[in-house]
Amino acid sequence: MLLSTSAHVAPPFAGAVILATGAILLGCAATIDLSCRQHLGASPFTIYRYVRHSGSTTSLPKLARTYFRPFVPPRFLAAVIAAFLAMAALAHLAIGSANLSLALAVPACLLALLVWALLERAGGRRPLLPEETAFLLVPPEMGTCELRAADRSGRFRLAAAGHRPETILIIINESAGQWLPASDAPGTRLAERIRELSGHPADWLEPSNVVTNSACTEVSVPSLLTGVGTHESAEALHRMPFVFDLAKARGYRTALLMASTLEWSNLDRFFSTAAIDDLYAAETEGHPLVNDIGIDDAYPVEKLEAIVAETRGPLFAVLFLNALHVPFQAESRFPIPASLQDRRSRALSITETAHRRVFDALKRAGRYDDALILSIADHGERPDHAESARAAISRLENYSDWVLRTLFLVKPPRHLPEAMAEALRGNGARLIANVDIAPTLADLLGVTLDDGLAYCGHSLFQPIPPDRVSVATSTNECRSWFGPAIALARGRERLTCDRFDFLRYESGAPPDPATDAPRRASLIAEALRTPIINQTIARIYRTHF
Image 1 (cartoon, rainbow, N blue to C red):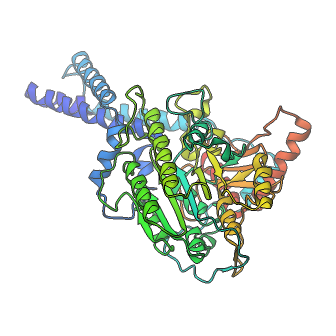
Image 2 (cartoon, helix red, strand yellow):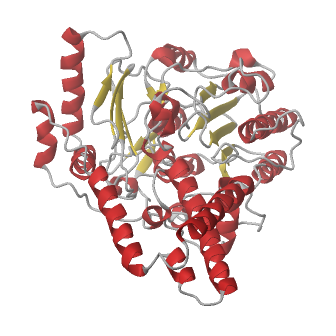
Image 3 (tube, helix red, strand yellow):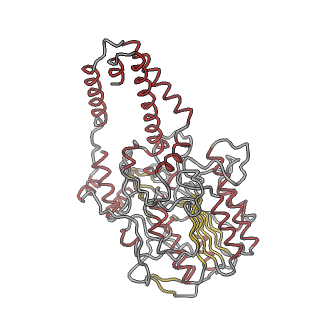
């Protein structure tokens, strides 16, 4: 179309300007589209329909600049524009102004669209096994709502005295998979480095089979800080007390310190009714966004250091670090070794420094020994390079073990009752999930839920059933997405479903048809008993297969 337009403009210079301008715009559009498909799995027009930004502090141009700098590399943009300019120039020289017209250009475009549409539909539907057809008996669409402020009062009571350590700290590391290496030593895992940075690595426990409850932060974090499963109803999510509420009822000073913004998917409204004394987020002091929708991790760490230093009574804090979110924080107030060049290694260095600073602050205040510290992740992330085809699938719809299995470290209080300590050690090889954090804290603080509420997770201070099933989903009543995905885990078994692999089963052991088939069927039956998971699987099949 650009060639046709430029060919019908009389002055040659004007035609050349039209052609060059069009090629540059096409190059920019193609670069943005390719980058969006690479990181999010779909075009910008598809993604935009599902993005909800709930605040007015961060303008759209500011967000655009924050995303374009790391996601759209200048050299790649220049190369794509150069390619479009070269193709346009060659086409113009080869075809000439007299031989191209709209009569030829329009049919060519329509033919290209028809071929694309036919290729998209060429695969046909995957046939269903008998046990899978039951998913299609339910309506594919679930009810939808948004995260909101809600009254959660009167939903729990203080029961047993419990064991109340002077300090409880939860560090949530964005996108920290269990497999992540240390910043400067590929043979050392990040979990091992964090333990070393504490100065007392033997004090820490690292369970071997931990899974996330969602590959999406705005689904995972509300679940993690309430104890409501991501597969449970929105009503339950807005009735369950926050972990901050439990701690406040026991006399703790409470703090939520976020390197990312809360003005996303209504998280600001959701947390507005929590019993949080000190709330700090990316928008609090107007610091520049440096990675995705997050500020430098150094700022919330420095805020936590100040809170630790000035607090004289019990302290309960949640610190959310954003450096490991794609495309990874590469610059910081924290020093980063010059030898680290790639963005992920630099982000890992920032994460390591943040942990060291926090541990040192607790030691200076005399809080470290009897503190309960958890360093965990909201979910994992794809590796930079891997031979598996699933490494190319966006994290938001990918429950491979890179994403499903997360960093999870526990330093128990020095004076934890022996029965609790023994149960914690005994759960080291059991299946643990992020949704277990809230019931663990409730158990520790001697809190019992009321008003018909119950945690779907388990306390780490009590034996976890060996056959427990954990559920992860990227969509539910509070979040929709063009490519939904789910995962069920039982021991080392995995049942995952997304638009690339329908109801994929992995036993975690060498294949054995005699046992794999019935165990797969039992996990499918579990999925059928969960309405949100049932509806999600039905939607995946109807939309993508």
